[in-house]
Image 1 (tube, chains in turn green, blue):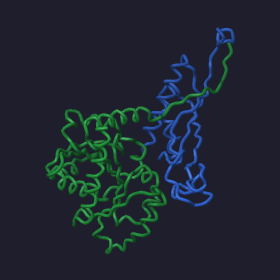
Image 2 (cartoon, rainbow over the protein chains, first blue to last red; image 1 turned 90 degrees about the vertical axis):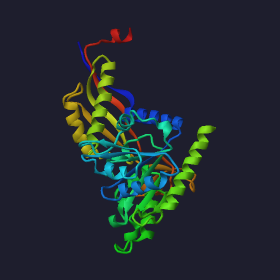
Image 3 (cartoon, rainbow over the protein chains, first blue to last red; image 1 turned 90 degrees about the horizontal axis):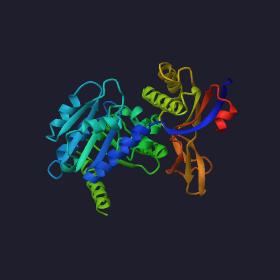
Length: 227
Length: 125
């Protein structure tokens, strides 16, 4: 009895399970006509304030809801609930990112057909969420003027997986001597052609442009659905 | 630190393949890892050791092949390697290259296995 060692070819996507779940979610959202937006950023960049303002502004025109990932607390979910929109918390424990299966589970009991927009706020982290597709139509990466212009260069992968970049806390730009031109260059370097928006959830600056953009994205998406 | 989740998924894939081959012992697992996959090699290697330890592929080694970021350069008209993850532009002419062709891979492509005691007659039958 001899044993022999040999190299055999295998082709397996490591994240196949997540990708399959994400694809199924995307199909489901498409069928239901709900446009799904995910938000990623580092902790403290103002995701929750931005999302709260977005939900509050949209509620009169659209049916909106949010899922919010958090390691341990439901503080963000409570803040978002002030918008009166339905909000559900996904507590990840020690897991540093959301996965498609967590989104699927969190949606149980909700009828997506009764929604126009679903927002998914990822755990505050600019590294791990990059690798996991959640079935979203649009991924936003946010960073605040207080974080420094070189953030995109430090986290190129997450910027590369995102569709648009939202620069938050623009009301503080002068106080921290924020350089918008350098920031723009850095973003374009890691993600050529990326759309950039500057907003302040506090003063409302830039929010109209963002809300118009969302409306146009959803209109295009609804057009695809009816074809 | 999501490398442990990824290591566990690699171990699952390897165990599944080993089972499919009648429980063949796995000595190496070869992975293609794109520079833009968002995975840190050293963290993944350490996580793999832990993840494999209690599994059907205990003792196997993870061999990582890093895949550079290649994108289509509209000016050169061909696929070119980019300068770096921080500079997604053609390494030849410097034109920005948003259309990425390779660099996001996270795929098990081969395994080294030890097949016990089957002689050639059995294999050909």
